[in-house]
Amino acid sequence: LTVKARHILETADVVVYDYLANKVFLDYCRDDAEILYVGKKGGDHTLPQDKINDLLVEKAGQGKTVARLKGGDPYVFGRGGEEAEELLEAGVGFEYVPGVTSAVAAAGYAGIPITHRQYASSVSFITGHEDPTKAESAHDWEALARSASTLVFFMGMKNLPDIAANLMKHGLAADTPVALVRWGTTCQHSSLVADLATVADKAKEAAFKSPSLIIVGQVVRLKDTLTWFERR
Image (tube, rainbow, N blue to C red; front, side):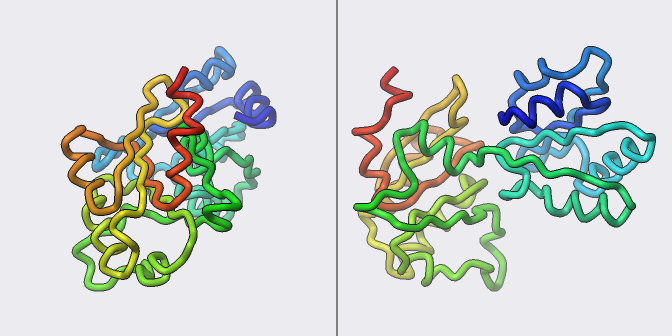
């Protein structure tokens, strides 16, 4: 949590928070602040997105200072951009406060630097939430498989078998290392390492579930050496 984010939580009249936001951060809120949970977990939505947008506009329209607390960074697969657009359309001013994305933090806690001079000079952040039955994927699987990038898939556990199959189908080697990191940086943190060909089966055997990141690439080879958090 940044110093600025803490200050905002300490001064806000209303705090609207998500499932992946660390509840410990709510301890910074004022005793008289209105705390509202609007989390989404799998298909279970406390409020649909349009109702969340309406709630933010409503509370701000009452002259209140509203803090929207998300897990990670609100502009990295957090729908923060959509909410900001809705606020502007309603004539509500807003301020964006950067967060630390799980792609960096959870990977780092698992001992995986997402870039490394020897293994990867670029990284791609990809949604794994895409419907596998769609006639045409929004992803350029060939480009992803051909790149030397570290690939980080968010919200992809349900589609893990399809993600692995698509990458191999388009040329990524079956022995490419893959790491799964669940609840990264928290006391529930856990991880699993396999290769692209076996990761879906091993995840199923281990009952490895969301919320998890999928990290694909040669940087995963550093995990055994740099796994400082799990070693503790």
